[in-house]
Image 1 (cartoon, rainbow, N blue to C red):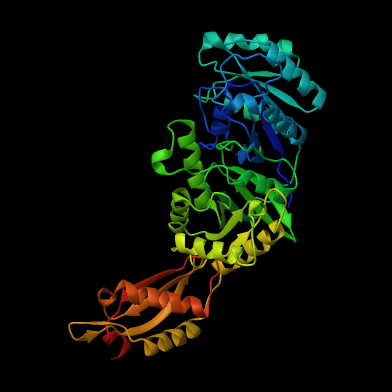
Image 2: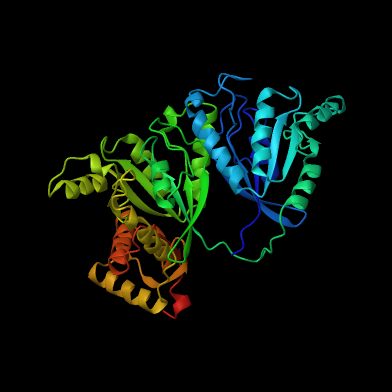
Length: 455
């Protein structure tokens, strides 16, 4: 698979990098706030301009001069400044083209000069985007930025889209020519990391990929955007999606945290398999059941990871007792495998991707119609369906309608006569025959007349 050219957006805090990122990719992926320091990690997305595909990466603002701030940094972001700068440096190193975003209304600052010095040392093609120049009068400010000596400067308004077309024309001219197969399917298994704040999602991502691709911190709420990272293992490609910690709805703060949780929910909808992380030290709390409920409402497969297991004093029965507690408290996920890991030490982390492959394979498992109908006959013989008003439900046949998730349609004379208990019985019997480990299954019941079957 040919890699797409990578375009990195860099600059000091609060110049509009995330707004420009959203403008280029055509959807609101990056969290946008007027407070500097909102973006902390690298955020990737694929885009295309004039028929040329490329990958775009948003980065946190590069704070390079000690004590210098044009705006107060977001909440507790100041403590993350060394990590933000490291993430931006990695993005520059990986990039084929760099876009330096500056604030056209403020003019050239000492921080812009220092970022420019960093970019000159990178020897990468650099385009300067003078942002927030919405009017013709303001557009004249663009000439001031030529003193950065980085090449052509483009007058843009990321918020309104002004000038972004000219900027993208220059981007696709500067990127290296890479043959891309437009018809190539993305066969990567998409894995979303979900859980309440501070359960170790980012630490686990870094352990799986073997590098500091996302910021890791013991402070709850560090990750705000959904971060995509691709890795390959035994010939299979995976997309790891790290997400913000999910709080209970009443505990979600307005503003940045609210939008971060929305992006976590969107990541869940994109995922093939969800890794739900629990904290072994604090045990299962209401927030965990809230996250589990979100998972059951979607179609992805799931694996429960009990993290920080290395910190638990245990004996022969500790793991079994904890798993029983997990299944009792998350009683709507009886089919989900439970692994006990330590993202920090790497304990049992090597077992995660094999389980992911098994769960994803189960999502696409298709059962022959003949086998399904034999199963149905055996099930209703062992436990006949209920009746209503002296008439019993008659089952005619069953077929698998789709996969991901596996969906089965039972044709009966009157589905209204079936109660919840019997539907659950059929699902349990189906799982006894075909476990569909980690995967939700859907059962539907449709009416068919007896005359249709010659009865």
